[in-house]
Amino acid sequence: MKLAVLYAGQGAQHPGMGKEFYEASSAFRAAFDAADLPFDLHRVCFDDPDGVLNQTEYTQPCMVAFACGVSAVLAEKGVQPSYVAGLSLGEYSALEAAGVFTAKQAIELAAYRGKAMADAAKGIDCGMTAVLNLDRDALAVCCKEASALGCVQICNYNCPGQLVIGGEKAAVDKAAALAKEAGARRCIPLKVSGPFHTRLMAPAGDALAKRFETEAFGEMQVPVLFNCLGREMPDGSSIPALLVKQVQSSVYMEDTLRRLGQLGVDHILEVGPGNALSGFVKKTLPGVVCASVETPAQLDAVLTVFEELLDDVDIER
Image 1 (cartoon, rainbow, N blue to C red):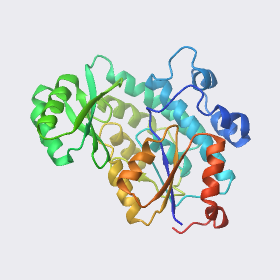
Image 2: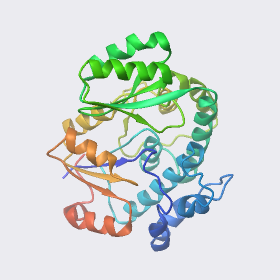
Image 3: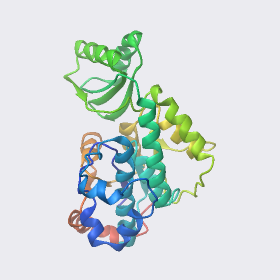
C-alpha cells in the first residue's frame, strides 16, 4: 500500500467542524489550540454565532486548525503517508503535516493569508465560475478572447470535466458565455469573496513574501506536491516562492492527482471537512481507494478499511 493524504481547501467549512475531534482527542486539542489569533477560534469554528465563518480571513485559520488537529491524530495513530498535498489553502495544512510548519505557524500564516487575500479583493467586482465538460485548451481560448473586458483566468484544474475560471466579473461572464458556445455542458457561478488564484491576488502574494522573510521553514519530512506545479518541488525551488506564486496562479489539482498515480499511490485519505477532493480522485484516478475524514467515527472506520497501513507504518516510499 502507498498512501497519500490530501487536505481540503475553503468552501466546505461549517459550524461545528472539529468539535467532536476536540472533545475526543488531546492530540487534536494541542494542535488546534496552538496559535495566537485575534479572534476566538472555538467560538467561530464550533458555533459561529456571529456568522463570520465564511469570511475568508476567518475561514482559512479555522480550516487549517482543523486539519492540523486531524494530522496530529493521524500521527498519534501511526499513520505515515508517502505523499501529502492540499487544495489551495490545504497546501498549508499539507506543509504542516510534512514538518515544514508547526501547527502554530500554519494556523497563524493561514490567518495572515486570509486577511491579505480579503484586502486584495476589496473594491474588485469579481466572479468565479465552474465550467463543466470543456477541455482546458478550449477554455483557455475563451478566457483569452474575454480578457478584452478584464482579467479572467483558469484558476482551478480540479479533475476531468471540471475547471474553474475567475477574475473580474464582466470578463468571467463573457468567458463563461463563450465556453457554452464552445460546448461546455454547464457554467455554474460560484459564491466567492475574491478572484482567488488569479493575478488580481498579486498584492496578497507581495504580503506573503514579506511575511515569509521572518518565518522559519523546517525540513520537509514527507514529499509535498505543490498546487502551482502539479507535482513535487524541483531542485533549486523554494517553498516560500512557491507559496507566493500559489496565491496568484492556477491550482493544478488534476495534474497533482495524476502525478500521485504515477508515483504508485493506491490509497488516498482526504482530511475534510467535506469530500470534494474524494470526488476529484474518483474522476481522475478511478482505481485508487479513497476515503474522507471529518469526525473520529469516520477516521476509525477508514483506519479499519486501511488496517494493513497500521501493520506496516513505514509505507513504501
